[in-house]
Length: 455
Image (cartoon, rainbow, N blue to C red):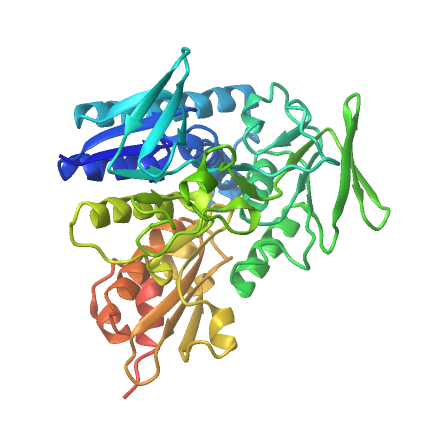
């Protein structure tokens, strides 16, 4: 029986453990922070639970148009945060029970390599344990990036992992960073009725996303009252009593009661014995892996945010599964990032899959494009939805769908037919011939595909 030791209990760790156990290996997970990792305990699950409340508030704000008259609702942020933390811990416990049921041993402690085939676990209750392994998988994740000039205090200057300990509603929130994390928190807190200023070092929010989608989001956020500061780079964040001051490099200052820092992530790869074991890291300390999650050391794999491949829980989980399928001799396909669907949980949501508009415009992929505004969709009209669109890319000649973008409510669900089309190399005609419900938002996906039909 092969033995597998996994360092880290996040999606890359627990999903790989489940696969390895399914394939008959003896599996041990060495976990420090709780099963589920940051994705479940401090990041994805908590943030999307907060956003679920924000979504209800957004719907209330538009309820008058639908004939619903009521006093404006208010948010009990303390109660929201209690629910967030409770759900996160419950999800962690569910995963831990699944691991136990499947025969995976969990060791509470901090693991490090002692050569490529040995893991030493510094146990949480004292002492250490040496674990021999035929294969090791490192899935230690990443942590919020901070700067010496903007040090979180956990009270008014916060990382995205610390916001759930807020005991009072911010009177003015400053969010520094307009990537996915910054945009999601800025959008959520704005929907909760909190004045928000978003400091963006680039010329628009979400610089890494589809430009037309990002413009729709920025227009909506601005219309709802957000103060977006483009091309504004943060120099420092300081606190004086109840006032937080964000100083910009051009000398301007922005003040608020609280500040959320969304400055990116750094990998948790220090003091893991990587260099001694022959595991090569790249810029920023991220572990270098190939498309089947192998590191440079024989028998050592890595998955998740510590690899820097694509910081999504779904990618971490797939990297972990692929690693175990590969090591244990099951059928495996290398990771293909062009099949990854992702979503920005703002309001409206932005979902993407496959090749991007930017790559197509740059000539990296030849593709035809159709974009349909949701404002023409019957279901959208019924629900008072005016913002958003469906965009589909297909290859000229063959009509094979190679990518798409959806902007609108529940875009994370609407992207699925396009994800299937990309994964299975379906043509626009094949997608358009599948029945959709009338009326439905998904009807716009099929309509966009129909408009790509060529005789």
